Image (cartoon, rainbow, N blue to C red; front, top):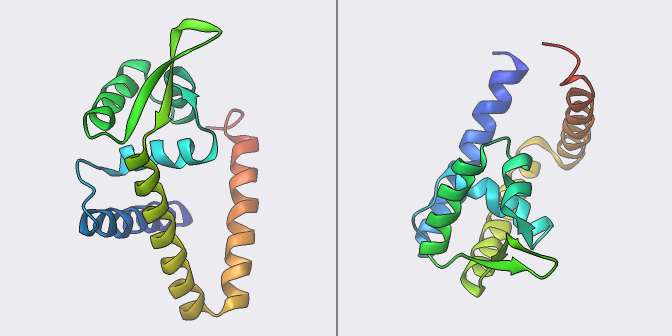
Length: 145
């Protein structure tokens, strides 16, 4: 199997592990695409709806649909930006913060199991190479098909 398909399969399985863990902890109405929103919010909250759409390469309309689902589940709230009243900022609620913390614990536990499986040094090397390959792919993503 190619690197690309292995990476996609690994990502799908990792998301499945996270979603199952979150569901066991009482978090519902989630999907892999909704999880990706939390990953960005955890790093740079608050974030505008437009910025999230750009980061995730989806339309603003699709992002608004996802935001409504998360807002309805009390994971996020929308607040007006003080400098631009038309622009809405996505902010995690306390429940959303709990979800992020639960997901981060699951990620840490899963990565620990992966390091045990591969060996600590091999796992570190894997992470380093994955980061390097990501940077490389980002550098060529707009110049090659």
